[in-house]
Image 1 (cartoon, rainbow, N blue to C red):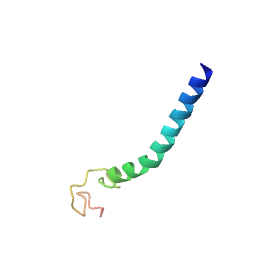
Image 2 (image 1 turned 135 degrees about the horizontal axis):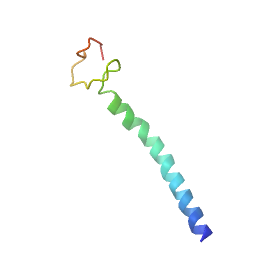
Image 3 (image 1 turned 90 degrees about the horizontal axis):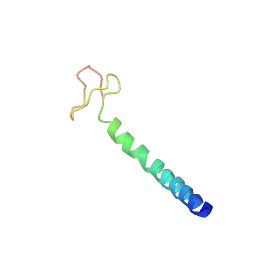
Image 4 (image 1 turned 180 degrees about the vertical axis):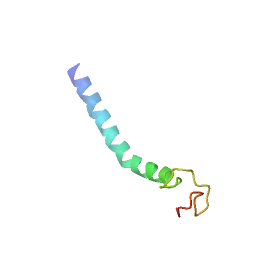
Length: 54
């Protein structure tokens, strides 16, 4: 029983490591679609409605 719990915890830790390697790329893509000043979604234009160059 203890071996099964140990292997399960190791498996979950390995999954967490792979998730951390992949997650920064996903966050960077979604963050690039929003204005850094006001937080509004950008619709493909270079400038935001607040006047900040994105």
